[in-house]
Length: 188
Ligand code: IMP
Ligand code: MG
Picture 1 (cartoon, protein in one colour):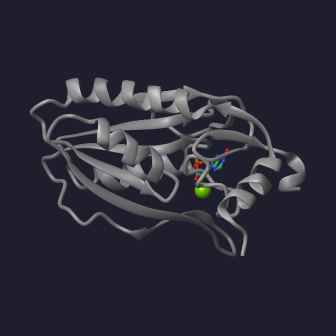
Picture 2 (picture 1 turned 60 degrees about the vertical axis):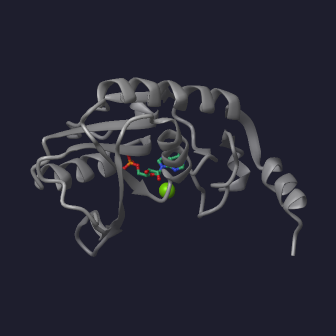
């Protein structure tokens, strides 16, 4: 078994460069949490995390959100059938959100398929309001037909595959405290 330190070196060898440092991320997350603490004061919002990529952002954000709030999670997956492709809910919310103020927390807004699907799924449950807060946004990748917009965005990033701070390649690298660009040879 590899020691944590050795595993770290192997992971780092596959990182081309650090796009967002741990400090940059932490500062931004605090900024977002301060802004939403102000805007959701007295509204007791429910923060819905879309698993699994959001876990780091979710935990750091919630620790810095200073007002009353609740937590809930959804787990969605994409599938490819014989003649269709789409998204499905693998685990739905545990709470009734009807009449509640809801904020979706996401790691990355890429093609937009996930957020479009999540938004439509939640709006059908009649929340009092529904907004989207994403740590990262890759606007160049947006699929035509995606109509949802992020209400709060941490960083707009270029069209490169990134890992770390919850984001994975083949389920790995989620535990890096920064966001890095993966070397193409690590996935080609
Ligand atoms: P979507 O394309 O906007 O639906 O994003 C779907 C999911 O793909 C995101 O929630 C991430 O888990 C994943 N994803 C998109 N871009 C990246 C990336 O650059 N690195 C790692 N995962 C990504
Ligand atoms: Mg993923």
